[in-house]
Length: 415
Image (cartoon, helix red, strand yellow):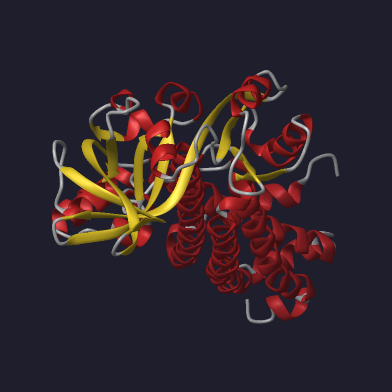
């Protein structure tokens, strides 16, 4: 035949007559169930994508893309290395740093910290710490002033604010007549850092690099050099090449290794959620079976007439496969629209719900952030649509096969 009449008939069968509205009802239920399953999977994966990107952004804002440090924990002649790295292809900027585990006290309060000495001007070229300062400025960390910027959670635990003094103690000791005492120094709190990740806000203390080096008795040496790269995903390759260009003998690390457990756990969780929620889509897709069985039963007479007019069993099969596929396609389209709309406006919806219920769904101390970001990726949407469409098409095969096996005489016997 010149035209594909199977598709035309399948499209017409999708719209039941008013006296048989029940068929349209169960078809609508199948479409709604599939749409809901697709929308839920899109929203959940978008939240995981947003969580991963937000986590990566905040971590890189504090730790830079890559670091080169000395095998013995220190680098001499670091000025020449910084100049050379700044000109290395793929490296945007480089900044030295001094870092050591320490303890900070204020009154009767104390906490273990990560003491980081930085050069404010160079540090602002490799990270966005300045943007995360709730109070104060990074340039306040002038050499010899012994000023410090504390993480927000750490300041709250110690009950300190801008203008207070804290005492920083390091493991290296001073020999005195009464024994070996920890080396310590009083620092003036000049700013509060709020990264938005509890783990960092609870531990970080920033000071001038020269002040940290003097407290740690490192002289003119530094712990390492932090790099900002043009392509952060090329960090493993570039940092190794940069270290080799300096002559080797360095310990290299990049953001993909420093926080590998974070990103690996997110990726595993995404895969598990995709499989579990695909089962939800599967349940919704198999509702198409009941819908198509009802349609086949309702259209027995039409099938018999088509068969007597010369329609083959393959044509009958095609008619009901088309109808079931249209039901699945409509459900997928509606699910994609709903899922994308919810994902793009998720933060506003969550904040409105928190305000309405008076609850806080995300505790920064548990989830490392207080917002619920979402990012829709085209690849995820296409994967979800593909899985849903395959399941929907599979669900149409059995009812369509039953329709193709109907004999015209048996179907018209009681008519």
